[in-house]
Length: 165
Image (cartoon, rainbow, N blue to C red; front, top):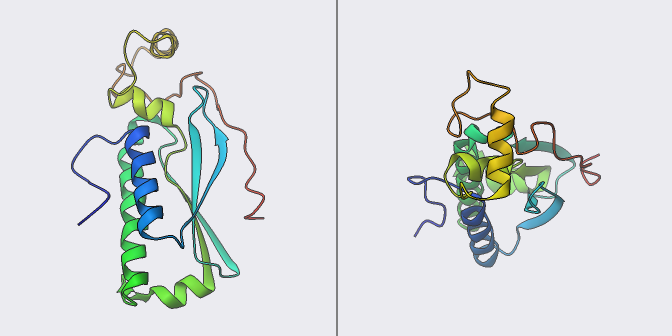
């Protein structure tokens, strides 16, 4: 049975539930919090493998890119399944990949914006109203769907991935 569903709007709470379920089923996952959004939501990074080569994938920088979060979460699940089954994924031996490469995945850089465009941020909330005011500066971008900025309208996270350097 699949943990990551790809046929529904994806928001922060579903991401958290998926991460918890994946970590319970696949305890070799290394899940870390590397920062917080404007609204206090955790920014997660999932580490797959322990090799010396390092790669970072990230998704949902802009609010309307939420579907990229599902893509990376599904990849994490498929990777874990292949690892447990000692099988290949896209013609790569996952066991070899696990030992040679550390893959860091930040599945949702902008959870506030994602919740805004997917309808998980209530329209009566102060964060929604703040984003709405910012949207007036960008009249050609429909609000809230299609909204590209984050809640503040500027880069909201300033983190350093010390463990990648």
